[in-house]
Length: 434
Ligand SMILES: Cc1cc2nc3c(=O)[nH]c(=O)nc-3n(C[C@H](O)[C@H](O)[C@H](O)COP(=O)(O)OP(=O)(O)OC[C@H]3O[C@@H](n4cnc5c(N)ncnc54)[C@H](O)[C@@H]3O)c2cc1C
Image (tube, rainbow, N blue to C red; front, top):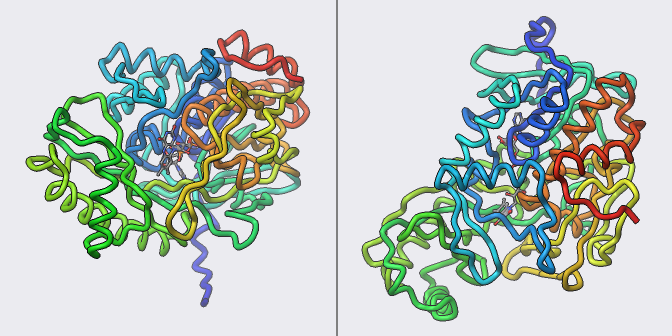
């Protein structure tokens, strides 16, 4: 490929400065920014869209996967505050499905995220993408920003990469892995969609819908590789959420692949809408109510840190002295090449710890990673990627960033017992750490 040097990056204003700069405003970035600001750091949150929430809003992902096990709620803290605010605004469903999953309203979620930032005093910069970084000697010196304002830079004592894809860390030169070990392929992408005006009373049981789906596939009317129709109730009567398109063998960090994925996802949505309206009782008068602003990317980079969480750690319900969040969601790997989903559950009532070291990229003193791209293998990633866990990791990253900035210390050098203690004071539910 030809490369040109137009000198565009030689001069640019350092227009944003903060003690803590969080890149990406999804569940992890939101909680990181709010926590850092509440812990007293001057905090900036930079987000590429014009609203916050990440996959929970832009990806139209719903519901929250279970965050309680054996009768215990294992994720609290800021995540619970999000739920309380959703509930108070009428954006929380009490219609739990058979797996105990609660739905939330994505439009109300956008407002809740904004309110939480405003209340905590987080400074926001929306419509701004971070495609590059300047790093030297284990320090991220600047994040490069691209927006309608042109090319600018942001400077901070501590950066938190909450982009879901580890964009900042990768741009700064951090080590990363992607996809499964044998061929680097990632889990499929899914364009979420919702059908409105569904007569829920007349909807057949799931087994019957899946049977109709199999028949439509056999007739060649559907070529979506997904094995069944995955649907959920929402906060709105008559509106059904579908997590059922499947786009395989593409890379969520490559703009050409993302373009292909969006086009393929939308083609599959059209097929599914036609199928539901023609074949499934209750959907005859339904219409396509919404699709995600972007296709959902389940898996991309995993930034290698001081510890790499493994599938064995997850399934063995392992605890760590520096555990900063807990998970109970199974290993859940949608087939990267086609049909099928592998689910491996933890022992009943058990949880695993996420060690703080997974948030600390190797070789960097002022960079933390939060949410989906933390240091884990392909199996462990498939469990920790869900929204409640991402939020809990984010809160820990925010508190840690504020401590490191205040103490002018390397992120990997902070006292993890102090961090755990502070998280518990803030309402987090942690294991005993051993
Ligand atoms: C198809 C699919 C289905 C899923 N189903 C569920 C489910 O049912 N329940 C559940 O709990 N979880 C589910 N998940 C997982 C979950 O939605 C995500 O893994 C979770 O949102 C991760 O949170 P995050 O904050 O790390 O990243 P994200 O939610 O991806 O947020 C990242 C944020 O960073 C911004 N950003 C990205 N790059 C840049 C950049 N370079 N510069 C500036 N901003 C940037 C993005 O716009 C976004 O706001 C699903 C995921 C997918 C893709």
